[in-house]
Amino acid sequence: MKQPWLVAVVGVVIGFQAGTAFALNPDNGPGCGLGKLAWSDYKTPKNIAPQVMMATTNGTFGSQTFGISFGTSGCTNDGKVMASQETNTFIASTFDTLSTDMARGGGEHLTALATLMNVPIEQQPAFFQLAQQQYLSLTEAGEVSSVAVVKALQNAMAGHPALAQLTGSR
Image (cartoon, rainbow, N blue to C red):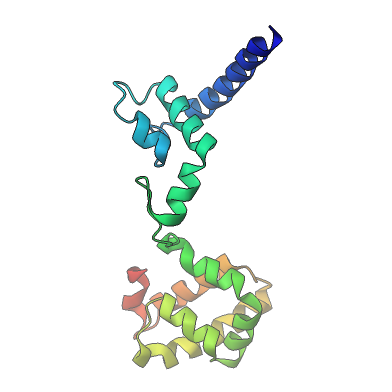
């Protein structure tokens, strides 16, 4: 007798949590996974009930995680970080060695950064020199975040005659 009561309470609690989450998000439900596939033909998929069923199905079977990892169940696994964040992520994850390369005006990590910022090989020496100058300015100002480095490089590139056209390509 107590088990059905417990199941009902758990269902209501989960329903309220899911309902609150979906009320704050205007999206029409879980983006992919078995739950999205199984319940997408529901007459009104934007209502709370089908979204709860989609999320519960995905959560129960782990199909959304699997789908994203392996590109199944309507999910994609292209592995791409948003282009606007790719450079920031690279700088943040390699900051120590990249800082050394920027201070020297060359190196593997600085070359990789130039590639991420779509700097052609023939213009990379100018980029390296610019990065070295910007590194000195940033360290003197105490700015050492990846966002500050990207912003400083993009601003400097915009004012450089050979690199100015590259700033809009990323």
